[in-house]
Length: 202
Image 1 (spheres, rainbow, N blue to C red):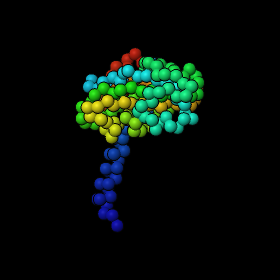
Image 2 (image 1 turned 180 degrees about the vertical axis):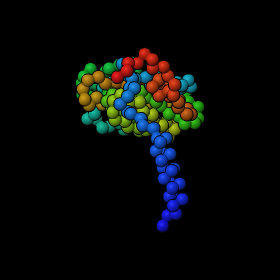
Image 3 (image 1 turned 45 degrees about the vertical axis):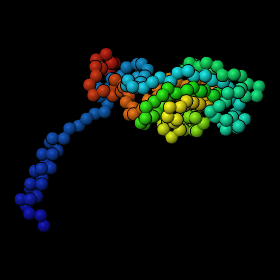
Image 4 (image 1 turned 180 degrees about the horizontal axis):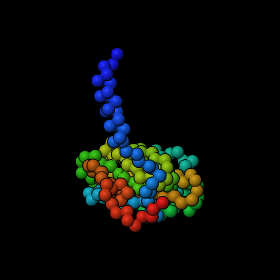
């Protein structure tokens, strides 16, 4: 049996807790602003990946992947490599595959990695003939670890096979190579303090 004084103390604490409870409504004070999401970006220290070339891929020729990273000769009946600027649409609505290739800048030892802003639609990534990543889903930034296939002091050839499975545009977005810890600029919405005075109330 609970002593009366102990019971009274417990009831008193419960009453005090109930009085101090706050109620928050999730249906109040929402604000919004129109606009695109904040761009994918890396703090200083990374090197932009440039010098891309591309050509259509003959996906029926499974020997192509075995020839990585050479791929210097065009596929049978195909075309030579052409210059490519990150973000350019080479698919033009066609459901097809294409090879993209470049030589990565030299990176110091450490956690060497590559940050893609996006590969549209899907991509398989090789470094020096060794597959190091496979990514599905357009418009998503993703990271590729490079150390396992990296050649210190050598030429590091990056090759990406991109498939445009859904039609519409297809491309590789800007990419950044870095060594060490990656740090992203957060969007303004993620900041603990930011000015939303210009946002509309809903």
